[in-house]
Length: 339
Image (cartoon, rainbow, N blue to C red):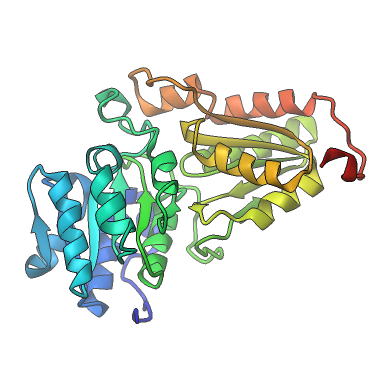
């Protein structure tokens, strides 16, 4: 039985000076004070992923396996079987592709209580090129049975996700960026709950569903559209991709009839595909589009340039909303003919 998470020394005021990974590192140290069963593991990336902070504070509970990611997750599985609570950190690309078999078979197959904090997700390490981009990880991890998949919007939400996953049985994959992503939230107390979307802006004309770095951009686009076009745009922060908040999606279908998803991930298999599955299964029609990285390897560049290039910044989101608002579709309330 997991212990109740008590207050941590990290505060929201740190979000202006600390990256997502640094906040995660501090929160994990605080949790280690009250959870002696927590152990940390790294594959020679302790400094880059910030789990090294935990290693400095608890050297006897920290293991660096070297550049051997497959061993990293195999060891985490063994520690979990021994009653420990492993937190594992390495880059998202290495987690889901180099060690994908171990994550699937050693951890998910046994439904082990391993918490994976995968850094440098999406195009956040844009200048490093295709080997370090990770735009397939959501598709991979949400296909693993027993896996919970969380994509925090910023450092504050990362702190909430890390604290929440302590009391969530089974494997959890938390995807964060490289660390230079701007903050959206100013307070921890906005109602974070695993599996429940957060409505950060109410609206009746169209719903934007976002996760990760696109949450801030979507909120800004909704503000612009309200001021310039008089549009009422609902924005959902779908921080948990699995289990997905299907009820929030279906409310959006019924109440706004237009939905667009935005994600720093391949359009195949990620947030957009998950939302599309819910809409298709409901038998209810709406104007729908998913925006993300097309089915290609990303170009190399700074993240902010890549977001603009692939239509994920506030200006691009604004234009996409205007485009979808101009589409014609049957707006009657009779759903029977659409099943």
